[in-house]
Each structure stands twice: as C-alpha cells, then as structure tokens.
View: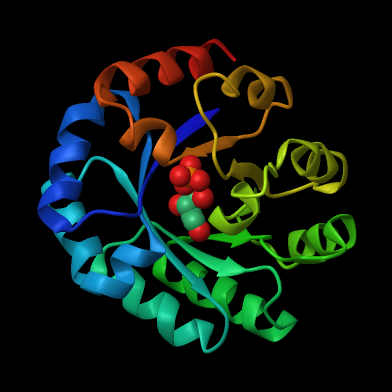
Length: 210
Ligand SMILES: O=C(CO)[C@H](O)[C@H](O)COP(=O)(O)O
C-alpha cells in the first residue's frame, strides 16, 4: 500500500516546502488540479526537478484529447496522469496508449460515475494502471466519503491497482486500510495539520503496517 500526498491549495514554493517536510513518508506527490490550473504544467516540472526520486502525479482530470494532454504532462515529468472515468471510452483508451508510449501510468478518477461497478470493470479492461474512488470537496461538504465505493471496486477490479481519495484523515485511515487499497491519497488530512510531518509519519506507519 502506498501513500500519495495531494497538494491542491499551494503555489510552487509552498508545494516544495510541504514536500520537504513530509518527503520520507510519502511515495507519490500529487500536483492537484487547482495547482495545475493556477501554475500550469510548470508546477509538475518544478516538483519533479526538485524531488526526482519521488513519483509525481499530475491531477489533470483529463476529459478529452487525452493523447495530447498525457503527452504534455509526460514531457513535464509526470509519472502518473489522471483521467476521468466519465470520459468517453476512446478517450481513456487514447490516454492508455499514449502513457504506454511515454512509459507513464494512468489513474482513472471515478468521481461522478453513476454505475461504479460496471464502469470500473469497463475501464479495467482498457488496461489502465489505477482506478480511484473519489469523494470530491463538494460531496465531502455534505458528509459523504468513498469507503463503501472502495469495497465495490475491490470486488470487481481484476487488473488495475485500486486507489481511494477524498477527505481521508488520520482518524478515518484505519477504516480505509481495512479495505486494502493499493494507494491512499491524502490532501487536507496532512496539509491542514499544524504538524504536517507528524501527520504524514503516522499515516505512513499505519499504511506500511497494512
Ligand atoms: O482531487 C482532489 C479534489 O478534487 C483532491 O486532491 C483529493 O480529494 C485529495 O484531497 P483531500 O484529501 O483534501 O480530499
């Protein structure tokens, strides 16, 4: 099981500062969608240049023209690029094809997917690398989480790794770990703590204990 730090509400210098604090405890660093919107793919390049040993995920949430966008994110240094599960089949297949060409990986974000079990089986068959259940900020605000959805994809996904994101905190991490996802994605659960290093260290410990 791996831990991904999601950075959403920072600029490039702040991102580097947070990563420096928690670096030993994370496997992947995510350049969140708001950061890409604000800073562009320069943020991906800046973080990869500064932390070449860390895997960098570009949370582009691609919806169309995937071949081009995966190519540009790959050129910037992303190791993993996200695409939406609600995108067209041909778009997801295009993302997988380009990622393979570039030696990169694709994570499908299932945010907004209505029939999760069916779509997870479909995208799994396209050869994607990760399938991620995700409760976005808007649904987190009304008390939702992805814990049941994680169990759903664990039942049906045969090839891809499984991932979970959305409002995971130290207090809820043990429940997440019970479902044994391959990847746990945490943003605010680390970045909004006053002691980020301690939060990341504790999460890392629980995750590696499995
Ligand atoms: O993709 C995202 C929002 O769309 C976030 O990166 C993801 O939800 C993880 O952050 P948090 O743990 O703060 O919810």
